[in-house]
Amino acid sequence: MSELAHGAHPQGFAHQFEDIEQQRDAGRLGMWTFLVTEILFFGGMFTSYIIYRLLHLPSFVQGSHQLIVKFGATNTAVLIFSSLTMALAIRSAQTGKKKGTIIFWLILTMILGAAFIAIKLRFEWYRDWTEGLIPGVHWFYNGPHAPGVKMFMCFYFFMTGLHAIHMVVGLGILTVLVIMTARDKFSSEYYSPLEISGLYWHFVDIVWIFLFPLLYLIGGRY
Amino acid sequence: MSDHGEHGTHTEHIVPISTYLLVFLALMIGTGVTTWVAYIDLGKWNTVVALVIAFCKMILVVLFFMHVKYATGLTRVIIIAGFFWLGIMITLSCSDELTRTWEIVPQGWLGNGSMILPLLSRLF
Image (spheres, each protein chain N blue to C red):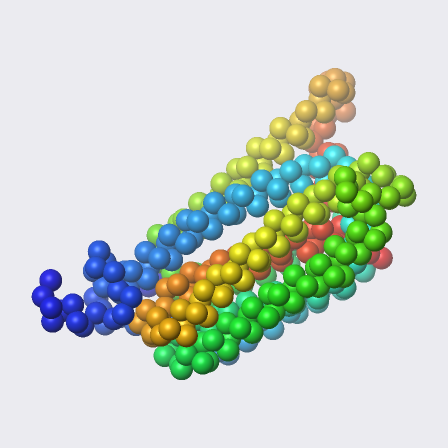
């Protein structure tokens, strides 16, 4: 490849690709392949959730009613809002906006992500602790269906815990993205790290979209 | 599918802000409706409605926020394969779990027909 052609390539272009567009498509494909493994990773938990719910529905209803719907719904809204700001961060990069704009949307996404975790910790998990609803650690529940409720709470903590770990990882990725943006790594031609991190962030949002009705709204609240 | 014939000249599809805002609005309404419906007695349909809304929200996020509407065919195949395998995992695990009761209640083989329907109804 001649020096001239080399110079014409945008920053971030890797030479094994024919053009930057092929590189972007390869990045997306690779990220989606990873997300498929994530679908099956969470899928294992959803499958066991389905089976145990099938076997112990009354316990799961009772367990679900230990959770507070308003915090689950608030967190759903917070996460959807963070998905919007993430999409807008990527769009700012695609349309060649100033790096300050990209960083603004990224930091807003991080604030919303952190708000999600803060609400979860302060108003949900901390309350579960004080109410004695943490199986094996702090368990004082002795209402109806106690053994089944205990199992439901195990599902609740493993599923929301795994989700929260993904949120924390996402916050770490966003921090790296903010630094990369500040160092002018991205342009309207090269923004793949932003885009595939966005895919991850939206995926974590989708997991919560399913966790909210499955954990908080079993058997209705009427 | 996107047109990938030409080299270099093809520019990325940029989703208009109005589309993002509409999707965001739809997702927020979906969240509101799911929560609201949970307080109305629909019997076993409560779960069905909640899952249908969650599924629609997922489709919106995947198509617009994750740009799959504008993705290549190969990417779409990978995504569909992922959900297909998830379907295999859930279906086969459930088909095992739902039919195991036959061992405990042997008259189910001979007597009142299929055990699967009553078991399925316990899902909701």
